[in-house]
Length: 284
Image 1 (cartoon, one colour):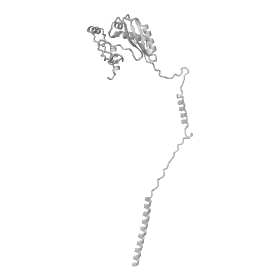
Image 2 (image 1 turned 30 degrees about the vertical axis):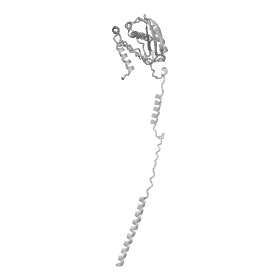
Image 3 (image 1 turned 90 degrees about the vertical axis):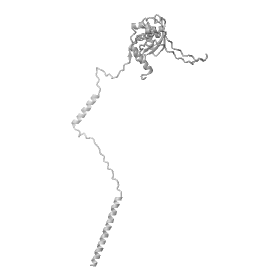
Image 4 (image 1 turned 45 degrees about the vertical axis):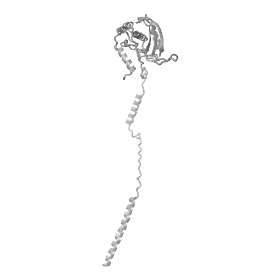
């Protein structure tokens, strides 16, 4: 009995040792597989090739439709020319800007100008320029437009005594203005009964005209012209000149001046306001 007990213990110990060795080998293999990195999986590229359908796969009615549509498209794109009416290219024609000549001064305006003596016969000078511009005709935007400035002398009986061109920007404008002066009708005598000498610019452009003057400030004394008080000719003794003073009208002259003042028209007031705005700025 004692011998059989020993054998059983030996067999149990051997079995335990054998199981332990198997466990150790199995666990080492598992850890080695976990620690060893796996190589990345290769990417698989799939290429798809789209092949055109074979002629046999296209139905017959589809072929006829595509051919008919292409023929209609080509026909619609082809320009049709009529034998009777030639083709005309559509171009936008830009019309030149023009301005008709202003009407000449009326008999009433000349009657007023023939008696108005203020500001070197202001009304007479304006009517003379309007008469010349009216006889020059319509102006069209182009190389013939321009300005011309004259120095004029009118005899006491209203006839032209002298006409001198100071400057001009258009030969055509100067010729038309001189022709108008030569063919001008008889004018009334000058308001003062003396020769009237003045300068006048004639505008022969479609963008500007000679606006009617405003007369309401004509009785105010003229502001003195500024002169440099330290101007020196280099020869005479240096003396500081006193600035000129504004002249004052005597009561009789003021009364005569106020008697001649007409009522300003709406056009004259609008022209005066526009000149002030152009001079000092529209935002002032």
